[in-house]
Image 1: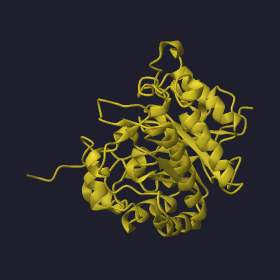
Image 2: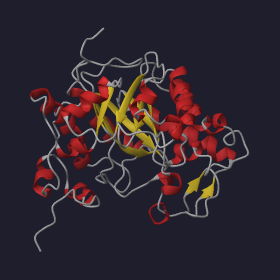
Image 3: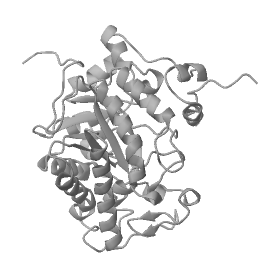
Image 4: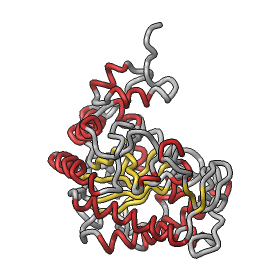
Length: 363
């Protein structure tokens, strides 16, 4: 119909409130919470500042659903009722800005450091490379129940919904990965069996959470043992069961797929062209400017997911609203700049792991 898609259109979902715009805060590791998984004031401050800064959808970092699923120091937890009071305060504050408040649910699987969790990590199948132990069928069913229980806690805390982290070589992705998942029960083998863990978590959350609870899934289309054609099928299955959005972590929204079967197109096109009914498509990967975000929605995505730009600008959406030529700050930036944008010392320390992000102190 020739009408321009605006980054400031509202976006409705099958469940729960609409987003006031097309900007979503990426779920970002920030290492700011307490050792027991309870929310810290630092992490709360960082997230509330993004709600204030105009992100229509505000998502937490990956929050682990089992104690032994912890992936990093200072990770937010959802595995205990002790986490609910902190989560409740966070949901209340994000919602007070009229934002969609979501928690990303996560289990690191074989990526859980043994010294952090105090035991060998667990995985779909024994993994000599990481020393991870394969889960039994019963333990897999317990894992599904623990994802669902974590979603129920987030529901009780007043969040509008949760996202399942099915990307980046974490547990759900490990089950999807035919190289890692060599199981012979109903959770391994065929692509459908490898996706069963994910689909049973989705069904359980729909069953146990309130009827207007927003449910989304993050997927990797390639890398980490993912086969693009298989992930397209998982995407279709999620559309069929009515997830609210699929969050495709593309690393670079406009790159050509690694899989030659899809060459000649951009990764965003592969997923934007799959019929999705009222399910929305969110895309992440190198969206660093107003123009990048606009290109993403012009390509057919419903939501532009901002990570690095949101670390550098708590008000990235507001900057875009005021200036259609807005581009995020040049790197590196000073620790003081990051503190002004709402990062704590520990988050600034974490960002030093990314070469060229934070200026080095003068020697």
